Length: 286
Image 1 (cartoon, rainbow, N blue to C red):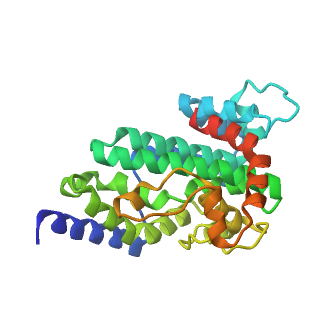
Image 2: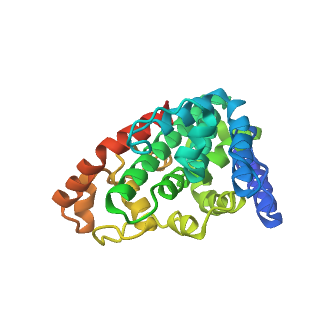
């Protein structure tokens, strides 16, 4: 057993013990997301209390204001300049998604390993793109609540991102990124579900990111699960874990043809959704 195998065994044991105990140890970068989530879940919490937490994180506060002033969420263009008003405008589901996006971006940028940063950044960019498509497609098709779809899209790659953050204690895994990708592939679903459970997301979101990536071909999409799967399909940004494992995954509108969908119908839906997707994407990415 080489050093990678020894550390992989230790890491797997640590994660398994936390899963069995139902208590995952979250990276510091995700603590703000959890704090926002806990405040949002408390019926006694006021918008001002949530805003106070956001103001302590300038990046999250700025992105909350930017999202509140998008046409998608502010069609009458009544300028929102206060964080408290911005929270009321975008809603708590969208705020959870935004907090997770900021945490994931920080995670990707802070990792000490260049290899891990590259993979994490790729996962973050794809998560944000999928989330933006989820929001826009849900709005256009009315198949799901757009804010819930935004959160579901941001959660799609939360398992791999969590594992990357926790892998910093195992340097041998960082230095052999292709073997680490196989490790992530084996554990990402269980870990992702556990993270979703800690975030206490609605059952519909749990079902929408349950590890079955294929879109079933029904047209148009009829529920949140199908919206998320379609967003994953049409996003042209690759999953870096797939690349490290040598997987060739069709992406973009042309991929719909392989599912029996009419490419013209998909392109029409994407064109109708494009402007909202771009605006949400810009707000989340900053």
